[in-house]
Amino acid sequence: MYFFNKAFIIIICSILIALGINFFLVPYKILDGGIIGIGLILNYLWNLKAGLMIICLSIPIFMVAWFFYRDYFYNSLHGMIISSFFIDLFRPLQQYVRIDPMFSSILGGILVGLGIGLMLKFKTSTGGTDLIAQFICDKTGINVGVIIFFIDALVVLLGGLLISTSTLLLSIVTILFVGMTTSLITRNVKISV
Image (spheres, rainbow, N blue to C red):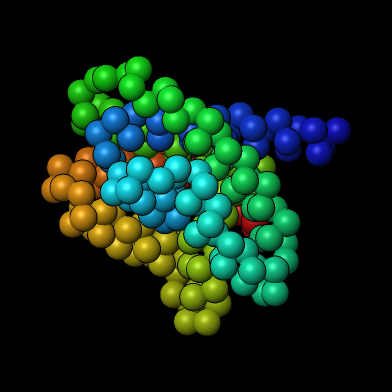
């Protein structure tokens, strides 16, 4: 029964993430942080499928996880693959919602944060730069949250420089709402993915 509950949660959370990205972020070229953000940059610049890029970019990270963080590998691989699948599956929906860009960045951030937060609450994730942050934390002792924020900021700054300054400002709003929503969902929960 636990397996089916976890599978159901991963599917629902992946749909939330994919809807947040395709309905609210992509129409205005807004970014999220981490591997999802890099996948979106590649989508915006060269029209590559963001979900497929997330999988390709995650391969080296999951190779590291296989050798050093086996639990992370097992608990995140399916979340990454399923969320990437839904991001590309819902790609045709990008043209159907047009609202104010600022409101769009907020709603997109809330949906993505809700999906990520619920996954973390159920001991799974979409993988990505969280592992890199954990690895750096283990080697340096720097707080993992600070490292994740730094990585997300670098991705958003890079995207803002490559795409536009409006992308940068809206993306900052998005990652703030992703972070706040994820924090609200996971408060009082010990995260050990």
